[in-house]
Length: 78
Image (cartoon, rainbow, N blue to C red; front, side, top):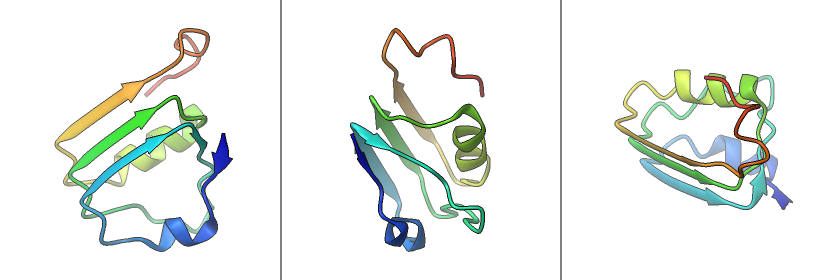
């Protein structure tokens, strides 16, 4: 999987986001995607802490889809 570039975390105007087969490592200064309405993550590598932080900072989020590999499904906690 590819790692998201730092510039991604400056895309504050996103409303819909679909990420597949990538690694998400949230920078400590990232404040969230406050306009995000729809988020789909398919086979991504992300820590439970980063996932929780990402979701909790998306105040307008209406639709969340997580496709998690079976081998990791017991490791994710929101």
